[in-house]
Length: 173
Length: 234
Image (cartoon, rainbow over all chains, first blue to last red; front, top):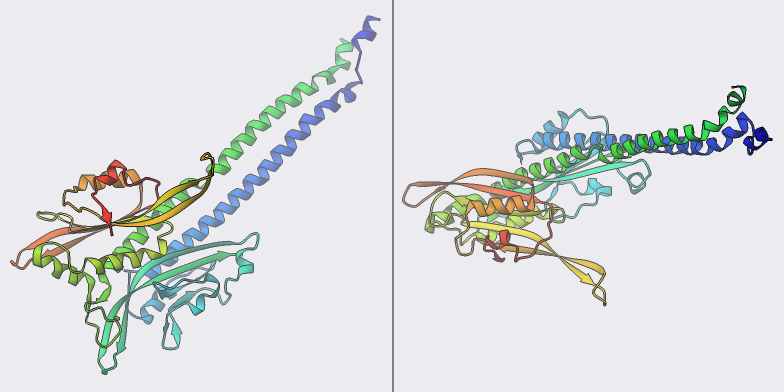
């Protein structure tokens, strides 16, 4: 009789393990969810840093001394860059102009038939790319001075130094 | 003995709860890690951008051309000169900046326009002697005003107003006052450049030009560190 009372609710070794499976499974689900989230956060931020570092390198190279004397000099600075990823588009635009980063080519200052533009891709940043789930976009703006030579209405050669802004947009798809 | 051996499953729930506690500790650690990871690098990145921008902006302000006679700079009638040359010329007359003060303010505002939503800033010229130790001192900052609901309990919206000031109005500001203000707002980037001011007498006065950026901070005009700068609306 005593042995029977002591065995109340006893379902056997496997039967008694069943309730313990609830906290066990709960712990495993929580653990792997957190692990997945942490790895995702780590990867996301690492990509952000890579983009930030790339933008700093690009802007440092293109800014140089902060004075752009000609398109040739700008292109020389651009050619010194050796960045494959992330994709980037950088260039000089007018200081007061509002910039549309999805149509950068129309924003860059022209010189002859060329633009003050530096890029490592023929692709352009579109709204679909920018707002897609895994896309990362970083943009930075810096003021610079640019020498501008022109002939005035009286036929005199003039040289002025105008403030412009360097815009750098980098993205990873 | 045989009975105890057969009932060993009884301890399984306790084991599982201990396992849960260990897992929760690990999860807490992972949450802490993911919230902190890269925070320092992110802060450094913002600070680096602020410093780079300030350096570029200072060069741009100082080296830009401007029109001395208010004609558009690329027009035939424009009398083009470097802004800094005009400022030095202005200073040489009476050791103060009066005549081209407005042009300098416009240039500073124009160069800082791309980041005006992200940063507040101050720009000053300091000359290491009397009578005017700060012949030019400009501050642009944003003031936040909370709009409450009818009961005056909940904030419905926050109005942001950009305010521009010319400071040192009574010529009493010291470098210490400015340093206290910079510490108060927490500079995100700054750039300094030395400058020489030739005088009509033939002598030269040495000075500095400084630009300081900070992320907008909520304070009003009665804040003591700001009051000491003796600012008036520009």
